Length: 69
Image (cartoon, rainbow, N blue to C red; front, top):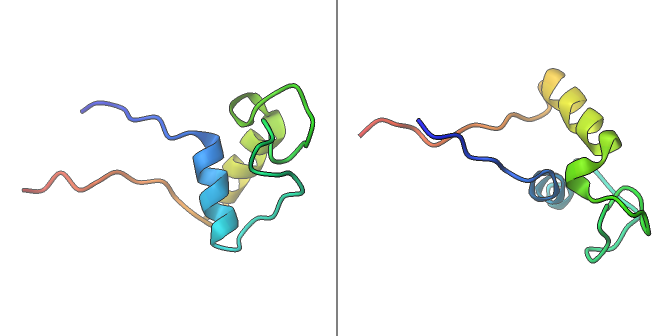
């Protein structure tokens, strides 16, 4: 089985669209949590910690497609 990496930005934007998280940034910002920051969503430790905490609490999970045929 091949690992597929989903970007933190994609996950965070999906959670935002679902009304689960909010952010002060604009879609064009590198980091939606820290507008004007030099880092991006993939390297933001705040985003990493928030998403991990939410997964640990069972607020969402990331799963793959079923392998049944």
